[in-house]
Image 1: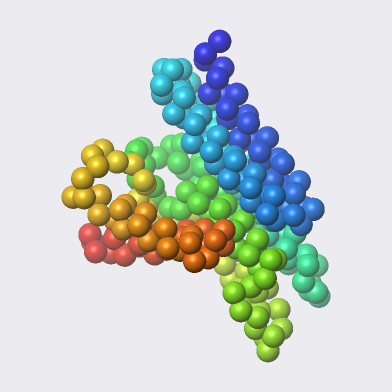
Image 2: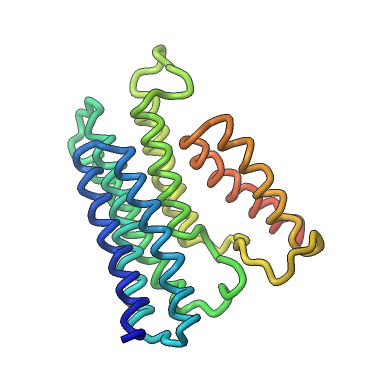
Length: 231
């Protein structure tokens, strides 16, 4: 019986992604983001449960990737697609560019399954982080932007269209990115992780939910800076 528990949790992740996608197409971005977060919680606990119960299996690994591409690939793609459809665009194919996020998320997950270098860190942007970035960004833009650039028509349309290929590149890039995994709780060796966590607190306090998007951008920047320094 216990061998089915992790896969059940993984399926809860997948279902959360399906619900998030539904709300995305309904342009209910807060609910879409909420279910991506719920999916991320299930994603965290399925692997932990499998290790605790000693029931890890190849099918669980494959199922986890399939669930992740729904929750952290297709759902954020649907959010971006739905938001792009709100603009008056003369080229009807433009919103469909959002689904590149789902495709590159699938590619990133496939690479992750085969890459043995990512035991203690990540190579490229993790799909949950990418999904949270898009969910929080679009939620904020739909709620009301940080500033209103009325002088520039479709300002955020251009920003989003520029961010899509950047996001896709980061997913499959060879940029090392740190994971919040602690072997010890001391400062030495964990400096980057503690700096990141300490800076997250004021960002969330000042910006609320939309601070998640800023935190993910800061995570990428800090990873790049750290990697450059070590190089």
